[in-house]
Image 1 (cartoon, rainbow, N blue to C red):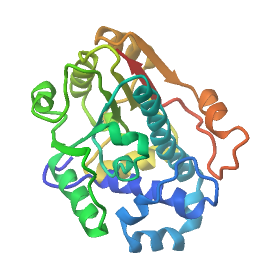
Image 2 (cartoon, rainbow, N blue to C red):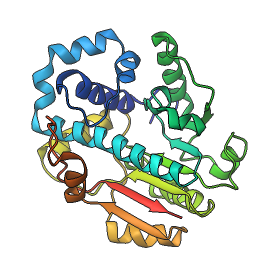
Image 3 (tube, rainbow, N blue to C red):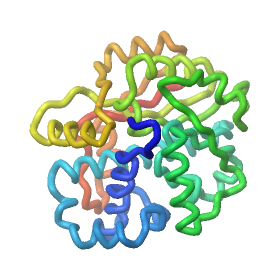
Image 4 (tube, rainbow, N blue to C red):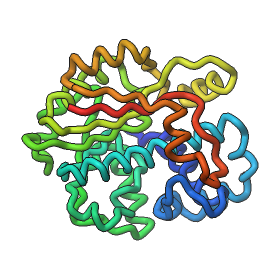
Length: 278
């Protein structure tokens, strides 16, 4: 990633999330009106004009992935909050909108959005341009996930590292080196008991669509770097301090969110969501 430029893939993910709001009809897996304000009228018009493109099989699968990961993380966050966890850290927040459409129960959360400085500046500019107010329970931390010592960075944030934290890191790890990922696992796994971590992890894929997307993001300066063997990942996570490791299967996702629902996006075909608990 160009350290002086905002993440283009974060903007692309926002477009795919917005498409779910615009072209998928009444029934939503994730209700996110804020994303439409965040990306702006021109981007929404583009989605409407090119709506058929968003139903190409590869793009459709990616749209499911992007919407599902946020819905699942937010559902797990609610469960954690009900269990007493009142801190929410979003690593690599990108264009995440939870903080700006938070339900009433979330007013009791301390929400910290952490991202690369250039991406965070871009996000804040979008919020300002859209007239979206920043809630009082939201704060921002600049972080380079490759270079920074995470404990030092977040020690100086509004997080209380002596209490459990719910951490989400969605669509980020594939762009990081294995050393940076190990550092994240060690940091989160070292937080107090009751801490939960929901993240996405990519298994190596083959096929023309994956190759095309990999080439596109590499040209944008954000190549896919890290893919995982889940058996090895489970061992690494347990060594990092996590007591429970849950890989969310396509069958579980289908049963939980798609069976009986009138959704225009299809169930996932691959496991990419992981939930771990200290």
